[in-house]
Length: 371
Image 1 (cartoon, rainbow, N blue to C red):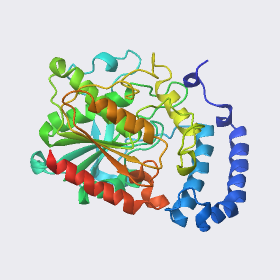
Image 2: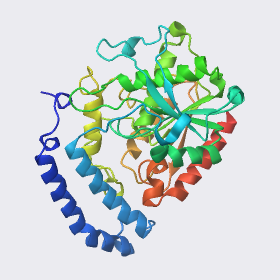
Image 3: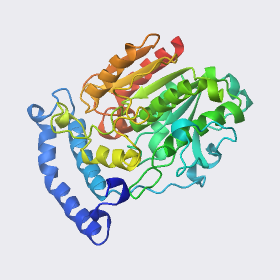
């Protein structure tokens, strides 16, 4: 039985409660040691880090590990919530555009939602630069709303060259066959067509962007639009921005990773996400729509990719960029964020990398204005 077909034993009560209480006690017990590591410069994993960066990275690692071992995907809602009218529904396209890997018999396009930042745009949006944003969370967490993407959108609006950001709440995957591939990619296409056909925003004004698994999703959508452009008649976007893109979901064994001690991601987290998302998809570990690494493709859309030099995905990202650059006609710019962990756009404010993420936002703005 595959991991996609069942939840871990720890997801069931009373084992779940016992485990969570025990693990929480372990985290609390370790706090003095974590504090000592943070306060003594010579003990820090990276000598350039602050005490806050060191301490919060270690604590976040433990919290993610505890959550991953339980393996329960959060439940999303299509209610407006505190986002109010900024949260808009997106219905599947009525056009025959869900082809190839998106033409799944078991997983059909459905109504989803998304949040506008800073506000719902007016008719003049057709002349604005709009970022279609796909949030991170290993395909099993996140909703793209204020709590998760508010600070991300603020950076992109202030420094990243965007006039408006539409952050998609795509379907999350989970154990037991919950919204597996290609659900999220169907949603990504639906949202892109929503901007094009419902709001009439020119493709030349749309930027695809995403962090971590959202970067994976943006890459998959680019591949799909290129491969099926002639068949579905959908134009390509202006450019793409990928922040710590998850280009090899099934590379989750971190034992030999040189950045294992300088990142907050336990191997249990990407393992959960990869199997929940694509374990049931034939050849998911090598399929180009799931695993960009090792599957370069030609694309006329310029791409900006960011990677932290202290993050677990650094080698995968740099290798993928090299592969893409070898394809004639591709323009792929790599920005290395010095001494940074994975996805500082999402986690930077919490663990102390907000200044670093702000610098990346400035470079994104410079990139966007060039294309």
